[in-house]
Image (cartoon, rainbow, N blue to C red; front, side, top):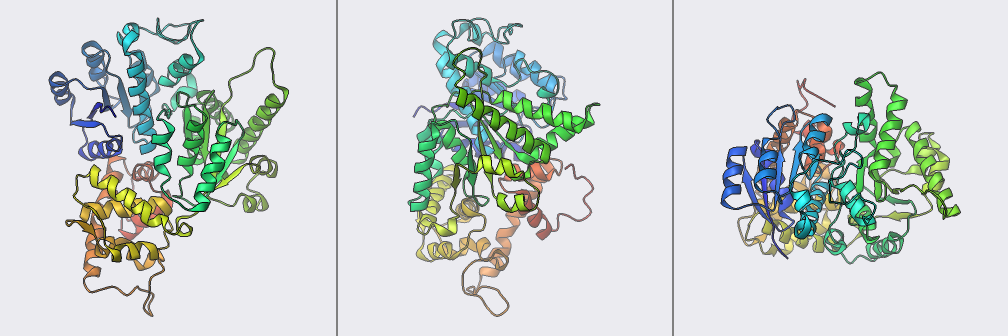
Length: 522
């Protein structure tokens, strides 16, 4: 595998470390710069294959680095990250040649997909990309650059690739208020298979069914507890259809509602109208690719109706064939839920007709506690990954450590196991991870299956209690740093830390971070 050099520019030390950790798993060489001046020195010494820069869109000079790279290193794509919404600055950055403009922080999987998209498109264009590399102006009629895509003779693949390169091209009004979604372009064997380590028969059956459904345009509902891999399965369905060069727009149902609510505060439009505009915007961005809606049960009544109408329209168009005349580019719809939608229907919180429509093709991800030996396989997978990422000489697990892992119930599933192994690798100073390094999962409040005393606490060897308390301190500091970096916005902090908001709330309560805090944004 060719190793590209990625230069990450971020003025915040914790943010710089976070972005580096997110991208290290791609296997490329990472350079870090805390400011533009350092970035310029590094670029002059050794040009990068991609620049990822976190900038403040409110700063009038925030696009200077972009301008410099486009002039001096025209073939190097620049991906910008904005910590807050700024549609005009984002459109300006796109016109100046930014490969993508993302919201900071972005979920790790989506950030990696955007970086891979920019790297792959840049590699594809190098032999004949003089017009694009020069950062020429956008054609006002087509929204494309002269000499690249968009023309009458352009292939469908080129048009789709160019339109997804930046979601801001040709965007105006409320549709431009949300930052660019990310496009998954990694080959399926790299981006999808690596997320499904395990030999459990139920899991392999689900993956087999997903392979059969990948080529279909039918709506699929993915069910499962939080942390079981629903998002990864959705991406697998998208890539399995050979849509690596098409948009994969992922959003949480609650974010769609919050985004439209934010728009309502900025203008006279009604909340219902804003919801309709936001929904139309998401469908347009995913056209020709996949729209993945997480936690569909959180959609309100109006958005449920919009979703139902879209599915009905797609079914009618598919049935009629529409062989003659215009046929719109549709987005395949994939949904996920960790709730029992049947119960929501009984409670009057979910439309029965919509439930019937989306329940015909369901994939149920098994919880980790039901996957037996997969716990050890996954633990070893994460151990190897994080040992390389953090440059630690950790060769494996002791038998007592593996027994502890097998006894645990894993309420947070694969995501929880990944976090536990990551902490253990960081804290391990010997060749193998032992049971003492796994102290956090022995917390009596976590509900493991180990032996317990009369007061509900597990039997622990001498010395574990102080270690557990010591292990909690780094977690507390990480949460505090993330909260401070994001102005105490709990939703964004949960996304950054790859946990759900309920888990974050419980941890904040546990560590006393909910007291006298007046700065809540969400």
